[in-house]
Length: 79
Image 1 (cartoon, rainbow, N blue to C red):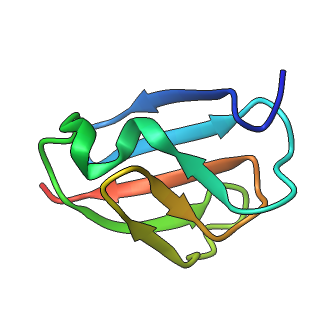
Image 2: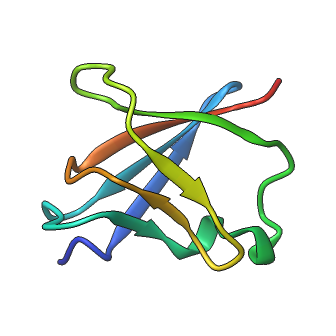
């Protein structure tokens, strides 16, 4: 398994992304790119799950890019 192997789970207000190995750079979630059309709500924030620390991110056509090397992130969505 590599950091490119991502597993997802959801709740009513968040999506959780877990990399199966520790990333050594930004986490790139291609499945969540705008062009994929899989999200029916807007992303409002991204946090490291372990300590609830907000991280920088950008939502592009090809991917959601998270500027963090943590393995698990909470992606907050609009209600």
